[in-house]
Image 1 (spheres, helix red, strand yellow):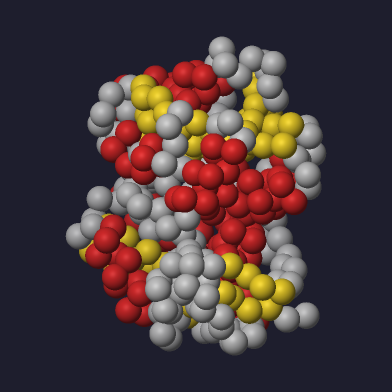
Image 2 (cartoon, rainbow, N blue to C red; image 1 turned 90 degrees about the vertical axis):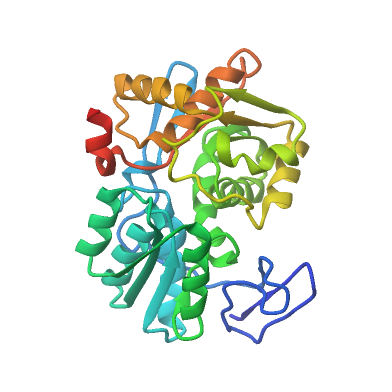
Length: 328
């Protein structure tokens, strides 16, 4: 079984079974040629519950081992890293991916370096340190990326916005959702877009007709420049959605194409709506972080339009990392 990474933008093709976090020629996102190896559910990630509330199905990704959907892609990525002989891994993240990377690196006996912006939530920083990762705090997300790249020659840089290995792990979410219906509307928070795009690939691989609704933080709604069907709710400030911080997702054009072709939309969500939706989700019994609430906000905006459709809302991150903020 062999595979190689290639760049659909510039034509770069790597050697067989050689890893690159992004295209070394143009720095764009990579794809896979050949067949990637299977990986196990290292800590039982995936197969998360589905809970119905009226006509809506909630996919409880916040119940993954580290409290985030990121476990799917990071578990797969680091299992491949181990097979390729890497001894350390590095990631830049606002928190959830860093916690996941630290957890799975410890499980797989890899050294972990995580680089986070200074505004990352304090509870997340505490978890990362508790898991034994080397924590580097820098001034902002752009600088975090630069520092992580500087380690990538020696360490396995997960780079979930550009690495196809992360997407491979995320396809499992779509495959699980495909068991619900042959036609499905999926609503999820979007930052890098790896969740929604990975789920889309998994769903399409099972022959499911998919409509995608991308819920984005109002201040970082990058997809609204690609998708004409866009809505806004809750104001222009989105400080509460601190996990949705990527301004220019590398795979934005591909994700936007999938949204448009399926008749989907983008919903920009501000703090007023995030706070209201978070309270409503807590009333339903879903202990999620504020960034997860943007998906429920998006659904409420489109509720009338989506009548009669099978809707799945992905709840992405655990609110247990935000207990201090949820009490305030």
